[in-house]
Image (cartoon, rainbow, N blue to C red; front, top):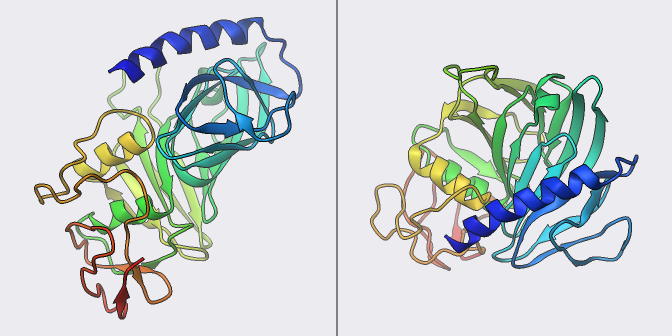
Length: 300
């Protein structure tokens, strides 16, 4: 509770800092919330250093979070980008015209979980903003999107019923969720949508709660599929969006133990494999047996 209260207070301070900051070609926003281990480079200090609240963020700045780290960046157009623990990201592109009230944002995430909430100027310029991961490009049409890159993406997909067998890259696998706003939104908000391109195929998501999973480089997206309640809650927690009952897995009381976001997956052959939506606990250095014919298991 203390973290979320702090977040709310700091977001107001960050908004004030943005209103006072000159909008240069380099500055794109400020740090609204910094929790625990967060490091970054800036225009003022190009060396990797501990991030602080209200510190300016510029194009190309490297941002890295450690175990337990959380960072929320408030951009000049009021777009909000949040990353969870063990993440790496940077803002690659930002064009903002306050007179026309339109903007274009480009962000790359190479590791960890994230949450992107479009500002109104982005929604006024649909399809021009996007997020890149090592295996996918996500075109944004004014929305809230969450995602994970790496082992947590595989963990969520592995516990999603109905998915086909897959062999995933433990460093680059990506899961993307369209969080909203949905078709039932009111006021001047339009329903959000995203286009996910990977492996030469583009999949459009237009319904809140739908997701796609890209197992690795060159592979087409699996989905769209309606992500289960457990997967949605877990992804929200990873990306700093809310609490999560970490003691339980899907249908498995106590199935996840005291998971802390560290590497507790298993490696199958030369990659991570899963199939058929198999559910169950993944514990440190314990093999659960081969899945989907992926081969001999070994501790990771």
